[in-house]
Length: 346
Ligand SMILES: [Zn+2]
Ligand SMILES: [Zn+2]
Image (cartoon, rainbow, N blue to C red; front, side):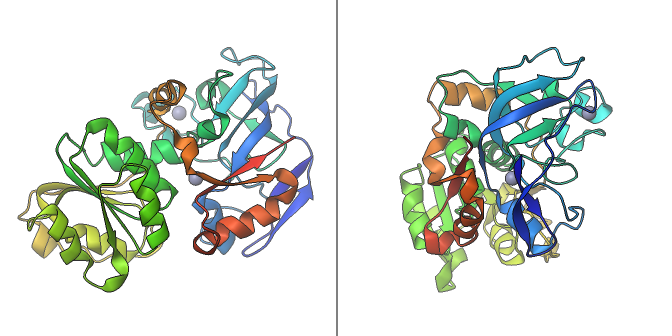
């Protein structure tokens, strides 16, 4: 089969690889139908995630058809359409029992990281009963792909950790796919204002159509002031950090009103300066996290009913044979006006 293989920092190849086989009775083999590329895949390609070794097939998102199941798989049958969760979980360990699936002692985020992933014609899914979801035939397939990772990430780590409430003023720093996922799902809780903050005016304008009430372009140097002009002098109720660099974390910690929540979603590679000397007196809460995908079934219901339409995030579509070009476009998102790219398998 063909697969997108990581060959070391800066190198990747669409290569011929052996088709995966069942190695544990709890495994399933899934024939991919649609996949996508994540910002995390770009981090891996830069060499930021040293746990990913050369030869690894990338990808942790997508939908497919069950091709084969191990003898202990009871929830799924050959031929069923499934959503693949970016997080693999056994459902039995201490962390799984607390719904901390990201920290499953025999799973977590392993796909396209510690084991071969979904940017391939076939993928092996360990603990299939807990790591796959049934997909009805009438569910928008592109929307479903957004449920593998970005929707639960924006919702759980941004919106739920940030404790968004009706009437709140929410600032989302970073108008990328995960920032947009937070923007879409924050609206479950009816905040009064959602301020989108980014350097890219095009993405900001786009966010209006997804429910942003106010836009702040952070390129002019007065970002804190401009957010407070909208939120009020005390700041916002919830700041969602969806970039993962010191500058954007810093914006978040400077716009918190007393009692506010700062929900960090961004993947950070460098330390940040925490202004505890300003924050200690403000009764604020700072949260971090890796998505647990415990809300995927709830989000899937909202996609099924079309209350949530994450397929609007798809900007480009490619055949799997053109995977290298898909990376080129996604890797130059601003220039290419790319948000999420869909990869179609035949
Ligand atoms: Zn991802
Ligand atoms: Zn577990």
